[in-house]
Image (tube, rainbow, N blue to C red):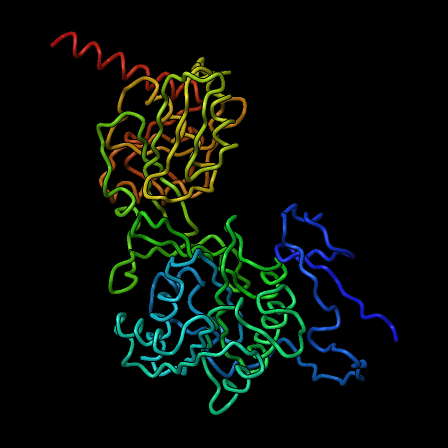
Length: 467
């Protein structure tokens, strides 16, 4: 009798190994390789032979759409992140840290759709029915017609949601708890997660129901399981936030039916998540305008302008190697800005510790924040507060030149709406609002910006001496 063949699969990246090892060659993680049966999986099992394929019906691109392609939830921030609502027949993966509010968000979305007459099924694999009901009562969603089940077997879930009228939305919380009879490995392994997700996606494509899958994240912030799961679904959303702050951000990472740079902002309370229509006021709510080292950055998240405060602290160091601590920004980008300041502006930071923080726990990903970061660093080093009514944005190159960025007009309009009367921006910026050119201070290079801040410091000193 032939010996049963086994494989060793990394639970972090899905790399297949011929034998067990302590460290994965694919991702470099330790103790993530687990032995699994390669014959267990979709369409393949012990003793099964391939069956003959059957032809499928071919259609043309032109044709009528029987139903509305999207299902708006009525929650503006969720609809913004998804591109206008859930697309029928799509699979959406939502990831986030434990306890961040994923189940709360989906319960509120399920209740909102149920009140509009849609058939919604909520399948929980981590909590009992009584626990889900307690959450629904707290969120004032217990009076809706959301159908609830507590099950982890893939075949039983598919048999349940296939009965009766086709559901408009199916929520699976979470994919790590699913297990299938066709896979021989334990629940939560790569094979089981892949099998369960593929079965749910197949149901969504065949019936036109929207499938929302909840996924846990690892300590590195990635969705647990192989990255192939993210490629299988139509949209990937990350629910982010700091437990020390009361707001949450729903960020779109992948979306086949909409933009991938939109965000939805929510505020967590004891009664659930509240939508934040103007996140700029939230991020600037606790701002101290007289503190050195603080600059307001006018950023963009998709089609939405967002104003956020950037805080820097430059202090003399007692260590041989100065510390560089960054929260909410790219540390490599900070190293580049420090090098440009020292090489082209004569700002010596080699004997100083540098701490950088984006207020409110918000994370900046666009290079347009270079000017705001540089202004905050110089302001902290000089001990001089920047003008309270000024915003900063622009990309800094390695030569010290300031490059223009997109959506200039939208950034300035948002700043003006929130009471900021001036801005420091690149000299070659286009789309400037008409009739207000005197408010905008255009700079061509980073040395010009440093000279402007130093000049304001000399002016302040002369005024103090005159008094």
